[in-house]
Image (cartoon, rainbow, N blue to C red; front, side, top):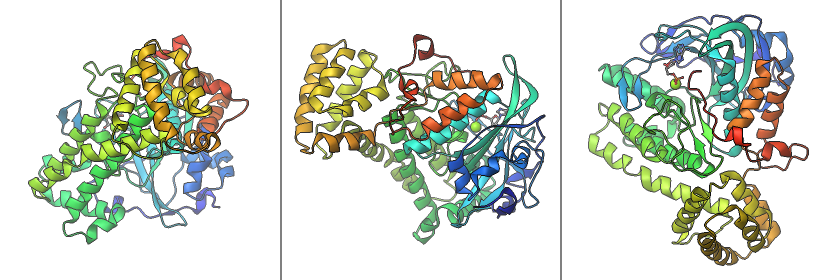
Length: 486
Ligand code: AMP
Ligand code: MG
């Protein structure tokens, strides 16, 4: 276990130089206070969890103090936003403080979000509000606990610094951890500005630091693209299987590592709705729940385009073609697990699709359906769940096929329950839960956000005394409009 002063830095991205990032110091926020910290994320840096309570912790993660070995820099990138190319984005309010090497030799980027203005701030104030910082914190640690690849969050620091959004709010900072903060948009920036030498340098950096096995392939850049395609197929399969809607799948929010990245107005589905749009400003539904699959492919095509100076276009095209079948295979695997099916059958895809249509037409709670399906033996479970459906004939037909399918698995209910509960969370980060703890935190009460974080970091476990967090949303909490201002 280490103290904060004992961290070791090795700032590989900073060493790429000024074509890739600009040195900027964090601008502190006033009267910093720790809102919430993740001991699991602290463990990634070998940090003693007790360090979170030290005064220096809040100072380091609010811009008041800096390690001597940190080299804070704003990264430059561009990207496609809602389908249109934006030639210059970059870290407008976040800084890469440096890369910490843990005892296992892994590098973790320390990225301070809300750290003030940078050369990439455009019209923005460089700040992040408490509300959005808490939302990113909770989601990062919860998705990780669900087994969904994601960036991590170390802590949120609140302050008395005022920030103007639709109304006056207060500034906060989020400390984000990820093995890399390189986005698809980094590659697009060097491609569209025709800096092909820097494009190659960026590619080499990513290969060396994050995809070293690709260096042994005959065409390392093609192998890299293939891995990014594979990882995204797996990532999006998890989002779709667990009902996670990202909301802003711009190519600057897509990580080269294939992890969930840059949380905005995201949502987990309450009632199943394939057409759900969680981003209030997404008028056309470009980033609706079911569109996440084709949009991920679209973003991969944008990345592929940016790699054309390094790889033959036909090879990129063929590799891109792997996305959909890989996605489909991962998705079906996950859905079989959610349904408690051990073996694979040709009809499974239809079984899943029919279920989704029934969930949709009867507006059934997506997460609880699967959890309750595992609670009791298949026949009792479907008999109990039947009450939630309006199309009873449709449900009975599905249930008969599901029961026949389940009977073939041949394990006993105790085993089935354990298996299904390990795939189907009891606790999900629903928007109304986040909303409640945010309102308390805005009043200075951090108890609720800390408690919710604890509950959501063990989403598959029954947690006696915390059942209220597992309930269906109240009517007011079902269709909350989450502002995309952050
Ligand atoms: P996001 O929607 O958070 O992914 O941000 C898109 C772009 O806008 C990125 O380049 C951000 O750095 C920048 N940005 C967002 N909010 C602010 C802000 N308050 N101040 C400066 N830049 C911002
Ligand atoms: Mg972003």
